[in-house]
Length: 345
Image 1: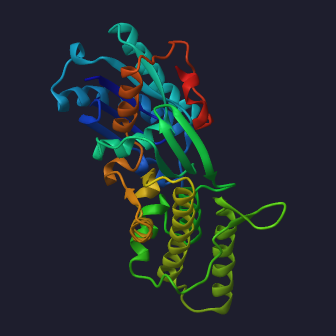
Image 2: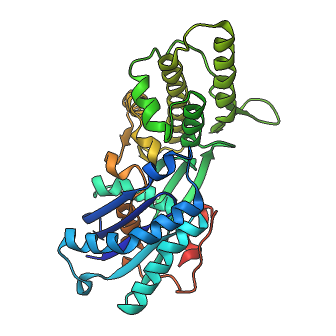
């Protein structure tokens, strides 16, 4: 059994966890959402300062919750890419310092690899190969998971990520930040068939469409024009119907691409990760489509859909068990393709 203390500070959650292989011993998540709501989105400098204020307390709480001590820790990990540079540096510096002080191996972990491993926390018997649908505020990708550290990107959004589209449409509808949860809740009372919106297909040079890539910027613009037209016509804006139609469009687009990709590559399991994995519309559509196609679809528990350190620890434990460690000179990367993850070790 490999036990890892993991730190995640890539954006606006200060998270620390202790993970033993695929078992969560403790998981502390301090969200900064109330701090950033007044700005309508994450302010990088504010996020970094918040991480600095909370990180030591979160580490102490992780040990208290797990009832473990430093002698039981085999390695220390932190998210090093991708994310906000200042925020990443807080977690990475803390992890490196602890690794030196306690003479433990250090591992830098790719944030998206963490989201893949989030499914393992609820499905410890899951093994590659499988298809991972990663849908978050900054990323929307279809990943062929071949083994630990061995990934192939089969499809992705060409512009806005799904979570980013939720935030922008929420701002447009004056619903606040973050957009995903509020739109999901409002959509429950709206008509998803009220408005027909574009799913954002990507045209190929020789004709036809890319089967797995997508685009959400056109959908966002379509919602903007719809709102402008409805406001011009007068009357009360049907916000719930717009939210429901928007969510329905994204859920259908993601489901179509994921199912087609899994079938084309002969993969029987689709594991969904990232904040948008918590969306009820996506869960409903993808589960129904998977059942129709004799595929298995797996969602992590809601608490592990958004950013957390348990998923980082799970990925780090697997790497450490294979002898992978990172240099203490490792830096942070605001962007780093998942296919280059082994450069971190």
